Image (cartoon, rainbow, N blue to C red; front, side, top):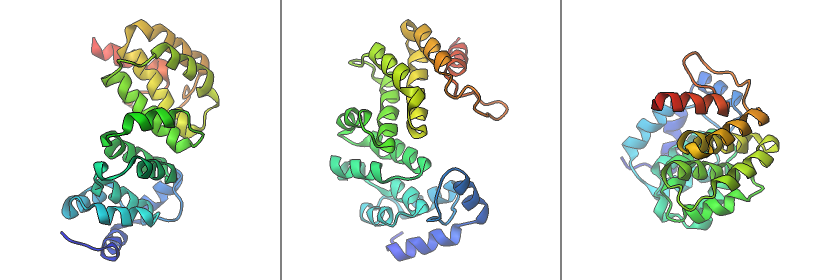
Length: 223
């Protein structure tokens, strides 16, 4: 399906609903949104298929739903490292940040260089992406990572980190404890002392993001 920017925005607007707008707003989204269900965004993306030029135009609108759609239409390899960096830093809604990291940043050829620079960034969305990429490496490609140094850093920084950063920093802590038995007791101890997400509300049947609980449950499932 070939659509221009105006036609695509009109489609998104028609798919919007008040309940989704309210949910987005509750989780920190601003008013620049239509309130489109994520599943409907995915369906529209499948109809349009990859369209890098349209994706860039959608992204520039700043509309949350347009950005969700843009993420699914982008070609990661067509973005320079500087463009990728600017996109990550321009995000204002954490769900958009996580989609961008999952669907675009993780496919970018310069993601390791970006990961290292973002880890030291004062920008919360850049740091969130950096720690998300680090958590992925801890699981899939830990060679070359200094896990002890990462635990030191988490221990000293996570308690006072911005909420956007705490989430993925905590994920890195949990992944160290789950996948690296040598460091498990230290990871459990760090999580316990810091207490980050200890009282986080979870639905029945879901695992708490509190690292000691998360680590213990995942290790139990591994048998």
